[in-house]
Length: 116
Image 1 (cartoon, rainbow, N blue to C red):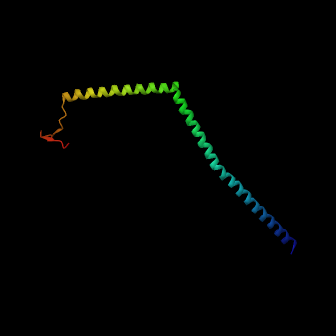
Image 2 (cartoon, rainbow, N blue to C red):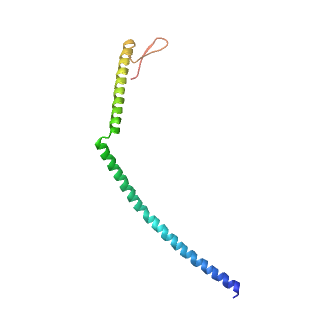
Image 3 (cartoon, one colour):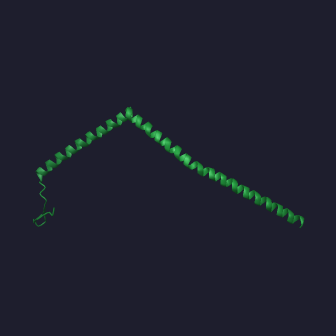
């Protein structure tokens, strides 16, 4: 064998060995990364549960923000109730002026009963 072929063979063997070793190292790193997935998920679920419990404790104490929200909700309920009463009064007023009989009067003056 010539010197050039020996050098080429040696470099090919070194390249092959380093490639195999590199692939095994990458596989080990990927395996470790995949193993960390369930661990991270369990940690995230535990943090979420702790945050939820903390929030529940906060709401049980009745913070001032909750009191403001309750006041705003009550104000909205009062507004809706008053608006409903106003709409009922308008309906009574207009039905007194023009009763809702369910009849349809055509252009010719014929009275047609609705199908309700």
